[in-house]
Every structure is written in C-alpha cells, then in structure tokens.
Image: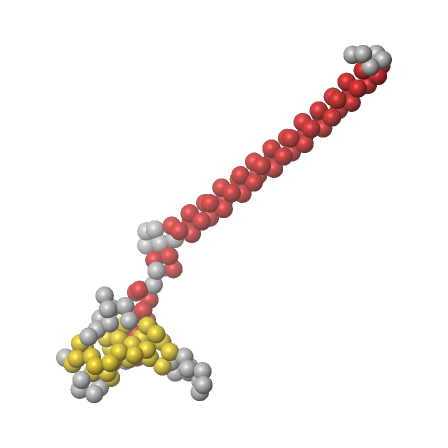
Length: 133
Ligand SMILES: [Zn+2]
C-alpha cells in the first residue's frame, strides 16, 4: 500500500507533503501523511501516504487517515484495547505482588520482634541461673 501513482486518469508526476493551512511564515507546518500530487494534466490532487486513496479535496484526506490508525486507539473491535488491558493486568499483578511483599515484610517484622523477645527471655533466664543455661 503506497501513495497512488495514477489518479483521475492521469499519471502522478510529483508527490509532496501538503502544507497545512495553519502554517505560519517561517514556521511551516506540513501534513506529511496528506500528499499533494501533481498530475500530468497539471492539475493537483491529494493522496494518502499509506494507500492509493486520492481526492481532489485536501480536507477529505485527513478523515481518511483514521483508517490507518493503530488498532489500539480505536474505540471498538476485538482486541482493540488488548494492549491496555494487558498493561493494566500487569500493573494489577505488580500491585498484588507488592501487597504480598508488604505482608511478608510485616510478617518478618512480627517474627523478628518475637525472636528478639525470645532472645531477651533466654538472656533473662541465663542471668537468673547465673549464665550457665
Ligand atoms: Zn489511506
């Protein structure tokens, strides 16, 4: 799928990006995906950079370009936001893992506290029996 090489029965002589009407002097803005096609009858047509869609109306190219947008940005269609769902799934899984990690950390601290208390108890017992326990 490439820009048309023939349009309206004419051969395309030149294929250039289209200067946008929002261009400012010294700050040109071009629609790279809307090609200005110079035909061999010296007329001008406009074409899609992705396929052979052509129109005499420059403004009809931009709506057409939405056909070539990546699936992820579409509102409907199967798997259209599969990427995002997977991404969210990964984040959710990560958060779940972090939650588990928190529990483990809490648990570890709990056992550490108990271990320290037990150590102190053992020391107290040792002290009580003259350090010979
Ligand atoms: Zn197209």
